[in-house]
Length: 325
Ligand code: BTX
Image 1: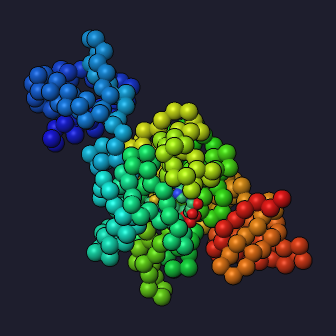
Image 2: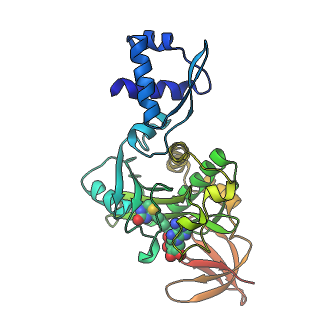
Image 3: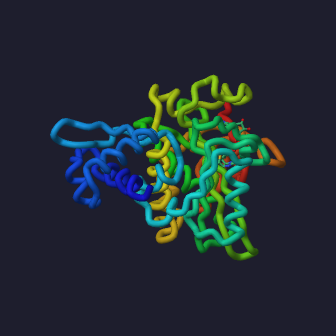
């Protein structure tokens, strides 16, 4: 009910501080028995609410769910995630988000699902989306930019995801150009930026984020087991997915605002500080060729610069990268 949700919101805001039944009763204008009933309802939904004698209630964990009623009370953003479109199962959150964007959904709309039957990566590759174990979401953004700048948002999003993972787990992820977030050299997050645009303006960016949160090795498709990892596998403890979503939204909002105000330059510096690609000898597979050489940096547009042994500098817009030895 509405009051149950408000109570959850109030507990979240209070953090570690306990709130007494009496205080709730006064704030919400209901009886103490009614307070107790709402608390019980929340507990049944998976909120871990502790009660401390003579002090009151406090919240020690939110449910392991990405339902809007769990995520929205946590949010600290003005735009991103204010509008949530939630599903148990979808083909791909990208497909749903594209449709919503075409139908006029506002910037900041987020599509979240517990699982995807046809989760996708770049070039129509599969994205393994174990049920209830990860964050499978697509965010609609509507920045006033030229279409050719859209790929920069993959890098902006990577920075936001890295900082969110750091904040929530204390782990230190790295970024592999352009769209992989790694822990110990294995992929824990993939980012897919898609576009709805005219020749000279972006209608919508659809930013797909696939983040492996609580999988164990067995939860992964055998095809990706060797290359994938999850926050739980690296940090040895499960993460609260809703809390992570909050953190991603907050960092993404902060950095898209920064981008709109100051352009890509400040984000480029941040991105480089997390990059495992720059300064390394790499092999880049583009659609046309395989190039080997030194990754010297990214340009102000987010394009990778690779220097081959003949001294020539190549600009690479899209490729798969591996370290060369
Ligand atoms: P990508 O093309 O860079 O990476 C895809 C490759 O990553 C696959 O070919 C496979 O080798 C590997 N892979 C597949 N699943 C996983 C996984 N769960 N963990 C680690 N590695 C994996 C990356 O594309 C962009 C992925 C975006 C996924 C999100 S999920 C929400 C949204 N909806 C949707 O359909 N896609 C995006």
